[in-house]
Image (cartoon, rainbow over all chains, first blue to last red; front, side):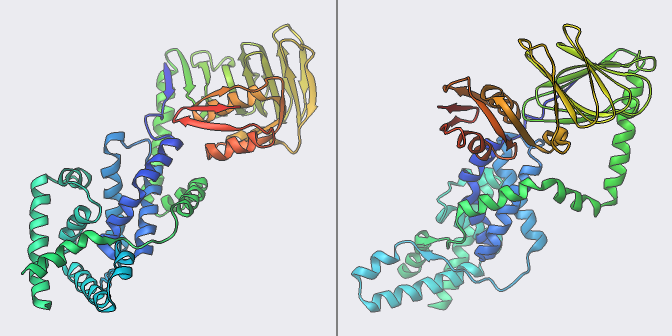
Length: 174
Length: 277
């Protein structure tokens, strides 16, 4: 009889580091889109990686990323204290605008921002996550479908729902 | 209407706020990975299923051994980057280091306790009749003790933590070791020098700590290759000796622990190649 301990089908330390480098932001942002709390998002993303490390011998390499999304989601569901969602997105082109534009414009922009973030918070969670993965993360529909293990049709549907929900709630606010 | 679309499109300008830096989170994660044994223990205890699964695993393991004992030899090979703890049919415990193999005849086990070893293993032998470890470059005989055997290439090194151990080199030289003594045979130096151990550090490698006392730098890197399952291309002088240690938790840290005191520089080329100059 021959017993061979070959656990190396799993993830090596170096691979794990590169997984972390490549995907940590994605997972953290994904959780942030759900909870709107950056500390919580970081903690959950970190825990998801820790779980992945513990399960490193059981996971197939090809499904690693979607597995990470799944664990992050599970951890979120388990520990989520359903608080009032309050997003704190930053504006990536704010500094540029501030220099060139008048204070009135800056004011308006701020108001703009607040309205949008409130409207986003009002979206249902699955629609919001899909919408923001596309709009902020810049992920393609196909990528979102693969990561969340859903069909592209479902992604399209969620995007449409998110858009129509947003239109309605913004119209109401304006 | 236009304004609504503008507002929606504005989403693309949003950025997730910044929290802690990524390197900080990675360092934190590293620490948690370091003590994952402690953590997983705590977590398991919550579930009663854990006890059942442990019990059934043990039963399964012994029944497999029992079943196979009617047949032939058992061979256990441990690949790079891993270590395995196994129990022999008499309940003796062996921790096998990376790139090492252990085999024994389950049929003859009742009459004579003999195992063949290539590489390194830590033994905790149950008291009883003579227990023999055969290596390519020597033989180790004990009755019931705790000891470590390292047999790779030209080197046979045995360290005794408890009890009495007899070591017979390939050329027939016998050395007796008592508690806290070690012996090292080299092919070119067949004298078998006995040395004393500092506070029974024979099994530190089983916790992932690798200590070296004046060991050829090449052998240190060989151990590192086995621990991390990598290839090391060493382009420095090979006649240097290293005293110190590394841990197998993190490759970068381990490389640093060995390279910086020797003023060597290293580069991780890809997932399996490290170049040292």
